Amino acid sequence: MPSQDSKHPKNLKISNIGEKNLIKRLLSRSRASQPNSPFFDEFYFKSLSDDAALIDLGDKYLVVTSDLLLESSHLPSDMSPEDMGRKVVTVNVSDLAAMGAKPIGFMLSLGLPEDLPLNEFDGIMEGVLKSCQDYEMGLMGGDTNQADELILSGTCLGIAYKNKVLMKEGARPGNVVAVTGPLGVAAAGFEFLLSPPLVKENLKKELKTSTLKFIHKKAIQPHARLKEGISLANTGAVTSATDITDGLASEVGELLEASKNSAGITLFETMIPITPEVEELAAALDQDPLDFALYYGEDFELLLTIEKDEFEHLKDEFRLHQVGVVTDSGKMEIIDKDGKTNILEGKGYQHFVNK
Image 1: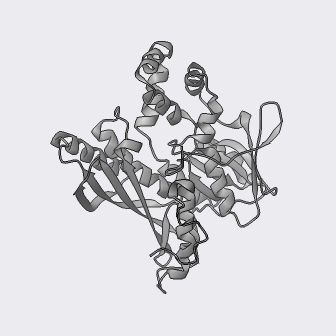
Image 2 (image 1 turned 180 degrees about the vertical axis):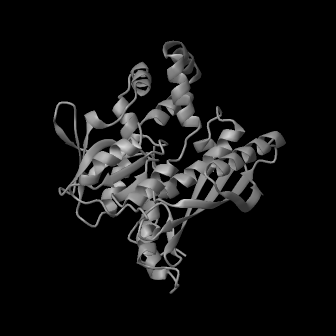
Image 3 (image 1 turned 30 degrees about the vertical axis):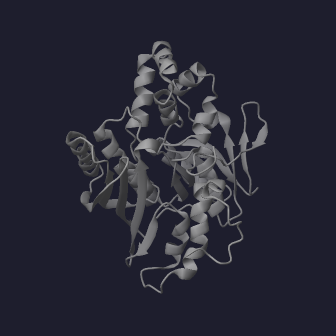
């Protein structure tokens, strides 16, 4: 039942506070109400601010995450049923990758419209099974129910060693801030896919065929950086990590909020990896390609803070891109191309927010 000591007005709606504040509202009450279970330890409670929960299994953690996809919000009409099935697995595995966990199993619950063609259902399941195979885990079960639109809800289980698990909280001044790949490509793909028909047709004529193919694939067929996450966790050099699902700026804010070291982060605009394809699409739409990297989501690259002395050899081994440094300012900042330092707003894509 609702908390009796809520400080919020009774008529406040979830759209007034947004997805992340809604989750924090729940988590602020979570620890006090947890049962006295031997499976819950200090790191379990710390993991409440991460994208997966840690359950104590001795020298290892069971890592548990869940993600929900709605056809109207997450699955553009250009996606094939197989692509939809692959995506619900990938978004869950990406959370495990950000914690350096190896997947062991996947569960899927589906909300299905009664008129969904059987061949589309089979295509979705084909994508789920292929993706499970790609990430070397099994489909363990799930549930189905009737719904007004297609709903795919996945739960993924993984294993991580206690002394190697990655979390959001460990960024320290002096660390290098890095990402595992270029940013904003999926955003460019969705900008194209969701454009009005006339705009879309003009873009098809204006953009290179190779550009359209590249941004389309990144949006429709994302891939979790699982091998990189596990291998980087094994190095012991990563101090904090998360995956980039809501845009670089939003995820940087998440690392800083979780940090216990009063850390700040300064990004360098000239270091943020933006591909020529993203620049081409942004120019065609008269938009800033930097915004695609900072404020959109769906990249599924990893955002990492790494010990400075370890970064150079890891950079080459994992093809990492430095995008900034951890400071002691307690602020999120970005240095633009002209060398001017600006405060970086920690916004990104969120459900429930007023548009």
